[in-house]
Length: 137
Image (tube, rainbow, N blue to C red):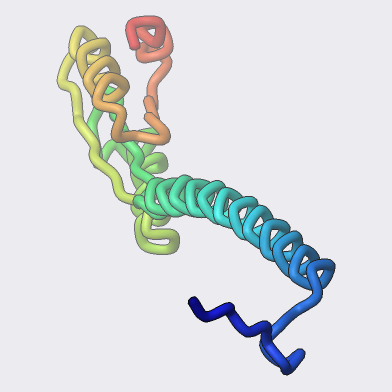
């Protein structure tokens, strides 16, 4: 039977202390990588939330306007308010919808419809009569 021959050169061998040090460094690096991967996952989740918020905030602002029973062309509150809404559209890109109730009894329904739709960042009611129905929203 032939006995194994020990290496004659030190090029093929590494001191145990050096080997143990490399193994420890590798374990530390793996732990650091795992921590960084976890941090990346957290940052990706934050990024996704921020992107969703940006998408939501980039939606155009929308105004709902409910005129008084005099309607547009009254040369008073209705026309002044409508002028402001159309100016906001022209200068700021604010979208709008408006309704012209023909009776005071219609205010509550229009106010409720605008409010419940969730589309409007602002609902403009131009007459005092509408103030009486504001709790219906």
